Length: 221
Image 1 (spheres, helix red, strand yellow):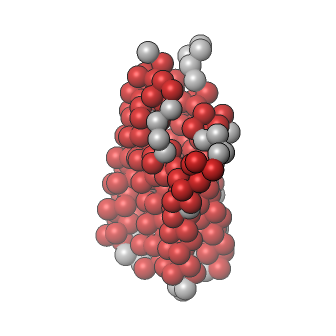
Image 2 (image 1 turned 90 degrees about the vertical axis):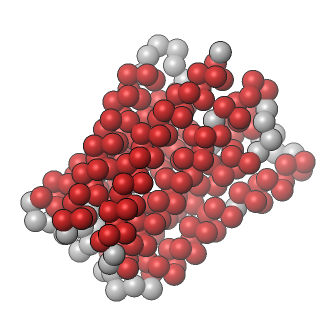
């Protein structure tokens, strides 16, 4: 239990650092909504993990029934998905047949997430409520990861938007699969694995904000 608590504290601190930095940099007049949604995604992680830290410190169990910290993960994935879906994706993909191969390749990410869930979460002894919560997370991982992979491999467009944001999309894609990895190590009951994944998620929370800021700065120059 101590390693699980440490992992959540690390993620919480790193996410609050990233969120604060994002609020300072992105929540100003004429700043892109795209960047603000990324900052809010990191904020969801911060507050979700804060709940889990408090729950663990007060003797709660993260693995016995549904717990509200899951909404932090879902919220972060929703913001990441929303940032890429719609206006940003329409700049990237004109829906022509020319780019169909990139759309098909991008399906590898959601398919991989679904396979990981079925093999390492569904077929475990975790409570049904935890499996259902994990299934919800997996659905949003599938949606967000599709667009992050798509924008990572798609040919560049005018103003170099795709190229500028590739590092961000790579880190965001890694985050989506770290969410899956966390469910896997929880399903396996591997506390050391939970700590390792926690350190990686914490690092990525700072990385996505910095990479997004640098990418958007190049894009807007």
